[in-house]
Length: 335
Ligand SMILES: NC(=O)c1ccc[n+]([C@@H]2O[C@H](COP(=O)([O-])OP(=O)(O)OC[C@H]3O[C@@H](n4cnc5c(N)ncnc54)[C@H](OP(=O)(O)O)[C@@H]3O)[C@@H](O)[C@H]2O)c1
Image 1 (cartoon, helix red, strand yellow):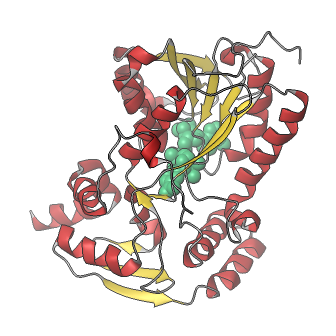
Image 2 (cartoon, protein in one colour):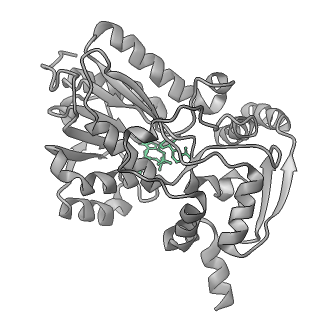
């Protein structure tokens, strides 16, 4: 691919940003778009990428809202062509688990388009701690980091930013992670003392926007930020859930290492969903989502992340999340 003249020198701040994988209604990227809209005056271009190879029928209301808010919708097909990425300083990927493997292609096309800064789809645990680096769940995130590092050898002005949070509170209590909010029950791999770092998605998104505006020099264009709010134990999490929901959760704690057997079985049967789920249990149970200190919160004192209790109160009051938590059915039954 012929390379275009770089859009930016790689020395930021990053004013023209394109978000990829940020249009799905329930995705984390939507939170970041909302926070970017609040700071729109600080950016010359804010775009979202619409992949015409996907089924986009349900995205119409989201797209209409974004257009009304002055967000540019950039069309393309897949990630092979550099054309849609031309003119942006920074590409931010919010691709989900099943799109993460496309990031090396996206990165190559962005570089060919002249983009010199990438935010890969991280936004979770620090994959360099504990055993995370070798866990199935992180295979594509690790591959993406290696790809960036390889490309960074040929393109010295290429920069990237890893933004790490531990876990996003709203996701941490989903049924996928063992929570049955309808029945107030949970199956947890680990013990009541097991910890994870939590921050709500809106506060996490606010920090991401701050990092885009954080000036950097030519020598520090490869950055890692860590932000979170607190690192509660499961015992604290369930105490807080009782305060928020008024219901005592019945919690069953399971042997973490049993998830290894589950992962192997899923791998043999070719069930990727089950494999990822088992791998996440291992990570979570071994405290792999506990974000190591120091965190970078104090660099951006204008963001004050909400407490765990306030974040859960907001989550359990949100109609969209109530539906995701299976609580809408409960209300319908009671009506
Ligand atoms: N730490 C945490 O607790 C936490 C929680 C949530 C998310 N995250 C992180 O945030 C990032 C985004 O996650 P998410 O849950 O928001 O993702 P998601 O909603 O599952 O997916 C985001 C986007 O990826 C696109 N995508 C998925 N598979 C694709 C494919 N094969 N080809 C093209 N596009 C594809 C989807 O497109 P369509 O809309 O067209 O399907 C969607 O727009 C991930 O890195 C995730 O690990 C972290």
